[in-house]
Image (cartoon, one colour):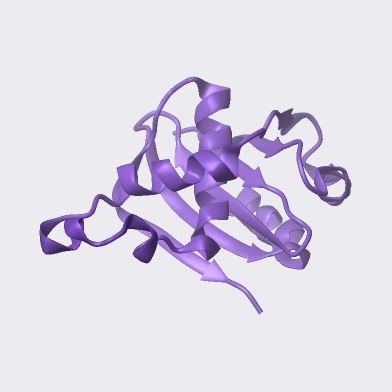
Length: 145
């Protein structure tokens, strides 16, 4: 089982997803404080069979790439233009509104703090030219100070 990590880098927070490339399932989707990113990726790298790490080339990507030098050949820099904008649409594809909630404005359900993880997913989907789905036991977390 090969797994990929995708990162949407940011100045204060980063979105990160871990996917299984064979099953096309999202196993982890988190938003974490940027200062915790290198240690979290290092921990994932030691416990999971990570084949590549894809990181967006946007906000503060250079600083985050420098902190992830330990990955060496497995680090891929990829275009992330408009991913935050596209994440709003993808959010409702992953978490569709059902029942009477359908009649309320969509913005009411949008959790902006979680959009960074979905932006990381979009970066990965663009890189792989494929869509991923949530696994039944996906770990969705937001870690912010």
